[in-house]
Image (cartoon, rainbow, N blue to C red; front, side, top):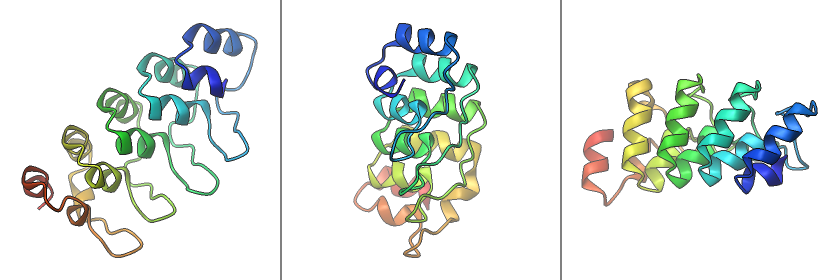
Length: 149
């Protein structure tokens, strides 16, 4: 399932789900198929997994990352919006205490930052484990800094 999700093989994902494979099965690192599909930006696969009951807030073992963290870090706006619509918890921190907003800001993904702030505007005041606000990670990007100030 993980390989199919990562490779945008919707037909294979559908086949595995029809055979009864749980969409939340985890690999050795605790990643679900949704983690892989979200990071790769595969909207249709993410939609199918969510419709099959995938846990939108599943966290990885070591990094405590959610699919929202992964999609935000790489700037997959369509997947971020899908996950937010599916009720993803924007306040969940990863192992570094960073939310998806921190991850989007540190990689300068302005549209993703905007989208997350529309759902949870107070998230810009959330500090990570190092005491840093998302604004800290936006250094050098004036438009991002204005949005997070």
